[in-house]
Image (cartoon, rainbow, N blue to C red; front, side):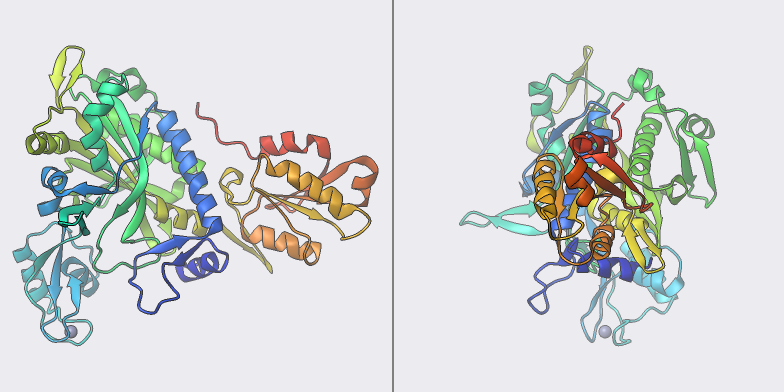
Length: 487
Ligand SMILES: [Zn+2]
């Protein structure tokens, strides 16, 4: 299904809406989650908690969204977190230099060229204002952080552009209070803010976004000897290399060929691959793209993007960055706090490997991937444990005590599942409405239910129905809606 159609259906069904849509000219890049979107997001984050945070024994925090300016001096964002922009001399439209060159040449342009290199490429390709055709200014730098004023004096602070800075800044306290040792992952799910020049494509590029980030702290001299990092050597990864070649190989083979530098990075790439497969994506739609030097973020020593194939091309869902001790070193210098950790008698600044997941774009990708059309029938084939509404409860007809029995079952199931009751319209219409929002199971009571206490369970994907005793329903649904095992 196309991007536009997926977005239209998702908005129509209440997964998400443009923020402040009732006001004209509200800025782009802000979205609200509706009831179904909230539920889907909560379940997706729970899957992340289970298959990454709990599976790996990580520690989770939830930090403040506004941080003082000094934190971003320490992190390098005040100078490094910028987009190259050009302005039209006539209509004053502002564009990203790299995107303009990309549109003109049809080739992906590196994000990390110098201003002079952008100017040369713009001139060489004769790029002019796409809006009015006039001459463009030279390349300038635009910092993408949102600045806010704290207190009556309006002290400089910023909305965090990535959740991970809180983890770095809090890490001395985490080591002090949590009795954790290297290597250890600190995880955080929450909001980040980026003042994008041209937010677009619905949930793909946002100014206010949900991230689920993991920062693995480790000792680079001893990490390779840690037993668990050898436990995913057989997991297969698809990898697109900077020279354009691609290969599918196990973690062990990827380390041998040099496309993955070590077992620690291989292990975490494998966890992310397994996470998205568990969320419902086929392995042939998932690949890691190893970034070239000029594409890496300003702090990254080696970097991979996990990308998923969609109707608008490959979309990056997770940035996997080896950040070295760049962040902790910066915060130690700027704050005067000691960020060193004791690792079996050795004092060191830990190195960091990061898995930075975009939650909103992941949800979009799962929704697009799950759309199924069969003739007149449309359904969302989300994995049952991710479905925003898990169980629909319907009386076959609205008479003879059947609605009462159906409602009794609904009230009981509601204790444990996200259930809803629906008696409006024909049973076919009710199944269709449930299918469209991905409800995996519908329970129907009928005349036979009154006689023998049985009900039918209908499967969303196969439309098949099975008759079960209503007092076994809770246990049966519990099995059908079970999370993938953590082990
Ligand atoms: Zn113009």
